[in-house]
Amino acid sequence: CAQLSVPMGRERGWVNVSVQTYQSHRSTSQRIVQQDYTVDENGATLNALARTADSREEEQAAPAASSSSSPVATTNIVIRDWKLSGRRAHIQYDSGEHNFWFHPVVDEGKATSNTPGFPCHRGDIFLKLGMRGARLIPWKLQEGDVFRLGQAYVLVSKIRLTAETEADLLSSFNVAPIPGEFDADIEPDTDLEDEAGESRRPQCYICYEGGAQGDPLINLCQCAGSVKYVHLNCLQRWMQPEGSSAVNTHCPICKEKYPEKAQAMMIRPPAVLFESWSNHRTLKLRHWVSFAQHSTASLGRFTEHNDVVIPDHSVSGEHAFIIQQNGAFWLHDRESSNGSFIRLRAPLRLTFGESFSMKMGKSLLCVHAKRSRWSRLRMRLMALRYGDRQEEDGLSTPLSISGRASTNSLESPSTNRNSRVW
Image (cartoon, rainbow, N blue to C red; front, side, top):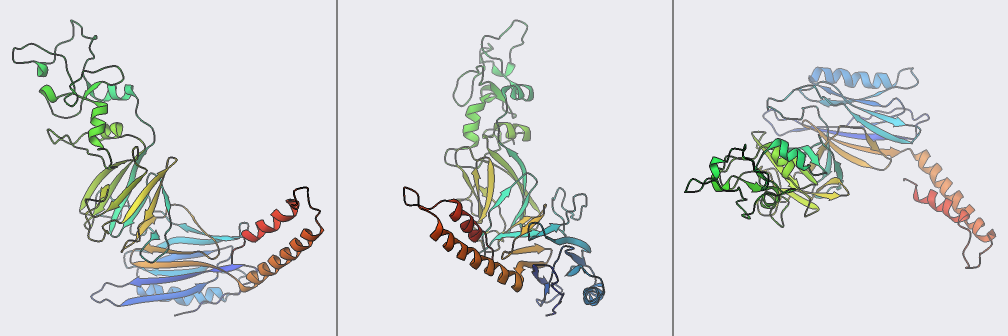
């Protein structure tokens, strides 16, 4: 355990970073590095080093930089990873808002995985959202977000909040002619001829009704004859059975998978398309989840109790769930065994007193923002001073007719008292 001491100066706190790196070279030994870093306005850099020799040089250079004659020194946090090198994050102190910011480095254009279409990179930093016995953090999902359930990865591929128009349906699919629109120039559909060879009007194979304006008959698969056409509303009811948020994406007759564009148009909004990689990224699945009937959807390994089934041994039976509220989708962990993580793509705010756990490669980071003792003492003195002023104002303020004091002398101290962070 090495301690890095930097004079406090004018800064009002620091960030405690605990780094745990797991070695997998024929042994189960763990190498744990824990240091206390003081982060000021210039911040700190989190660097990944591929070689042990480079890490020793960095450890020797860090105390030298902190004890140099320069007024402000940038702290260097070392992460050992034999497949990764370079700066991975930057921690900065904001003197205006009096808190810290964690800025991750996002590798958008680099392909470091052999799995085609895999959205993550080895240097991505994942924030822990929950685990059994740990703090639970709800997270608002957006398109492009990637979260981990155990060792399985899930991509938020698409979010639909509005339904498609009828014009989009008519231009994209094979639509049967509506009764009353038959013309002598229109050739009859040979698939709809009866035994006598006479053509008959198309009808839905589910409700046996014809097409109409606003509810046309469409054909999406290889079915022919009497089961060629189906109403869009009838197909939507079959794709999402009552009481379920999961969506069926295959034809029940010919077993052909519906086109991706057709799936997106027929899903009742609001809906989300997930893409999952499990079993060491060898199995890729696509999941459409509609929140039109229910505001929640469950994710896990069990088939009976989940709307999104992820077949991976590291995923718990009921691992996490998603809540839809006012067009926003929130991811919650269910105190799973291996935890839920979200990939960081934007700066994360670290307020004083908060702790966050992060994962990068085979390293686990625990970041905790702390205030200096002098700052805490000064805040306590200010709180006591505001309390004394409140008592004096309460005694000197005249009462109104209802027997209550003026709100101007009571709201300000209470607001300051509630906004304190210890």
